[in-house]
Image (tube, rainbow, N blue to C red; front, side, top):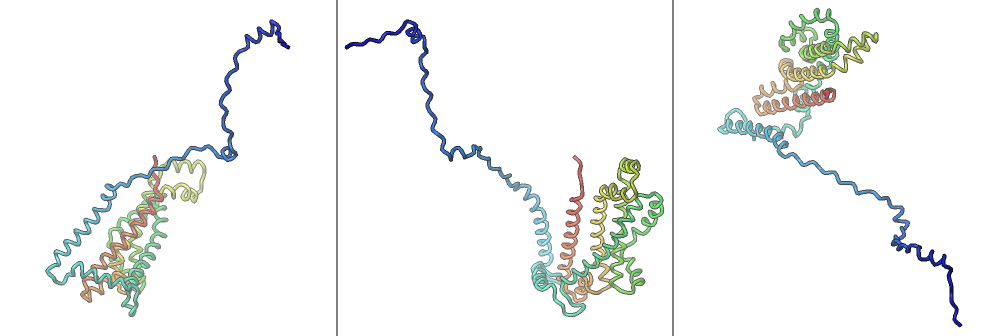
Length: 309
C-alpha cells in the first residue's frame, strides 16, 4: 500500500523561505576545576641589576693605594743604606709585635698602646663634652641677641688666636694636677669653633621665620627649639667636627708635657728610649684615630643636612 503525504501551499512556501541552518561553532573543551581556579597573571619581569662601575671604583681606590705605595717606596729608598731611621719592614715587624698585646700592664707608666689610646680618647671626650655644653648655648645667645654679640665678640677675637698649649700652665696652676690640666686645655681649644659656627648659623636664619614666630607670639624657648635648632644644626655639626679634630691634635702635645698614660706621653717616652720605630707607629695611629673621628662626625652631619631640590 502506497501512502502519500501532501502539504499545504503555505507550509511549502515557509519551508522554501526558511534560511539555512548556520553551522554549529566548534565546542570549547570544558574547563577543569584546576584550570578554573588558577589565576591568569602575567609573568613578572626579573629586575635587571645595574652593571658595576669598574672605572669609578678604580678612580676611588687606586689614587690612595698609589699614594701609600709611593710613600712606602720613598721611605724604603731613603733607608736602604741603614742608619738610625728604621726601614718599612722593620717598622712593620715592630707594629705586629706591638699590636699582638696592646693591653698589657707592667706598671703605672708601662702600659700597652691600647690603654694609651683609650686614656687619650677619654681626656678628649671630657674636654670636648664640656666645650659642647658651654659653646653651643653660648653660640645661640651670641647669634640671637645683638647685645651679647657685641659684648662677647671682642673676647673671642682676643682669645681665639692663643696657642692651646699656652693655656696648659694656667690649668696646672688652677687644678694642681696634670690630668685636669690636660682636660682644661682640650676644653679651651675646642670651644671656639663651636661658638663661632653656631653663632653664624643663628645669624643666617631667614628673618621671615622669626617674623612668623613673632606673629604667632611664640616663646623664646619655642623659637629656639622649633625654628632655630633645625636650621642651625648643620652649622653646629660643622663646628663639632672642627672642634674634635683640634682636640685630638692638642691632646698629643699636652700629654707630652704633663706625662701619665696617653698616646702623647707614650710618644715622648719612646723618644727617650730612642725607639724611632714605635714613634712612627704612633704617628700612623694618631692619624688613623683622627681620621676615624672626623669620618664619623661627617657621616653624622650628612644625616642632618637638607638640600632643597
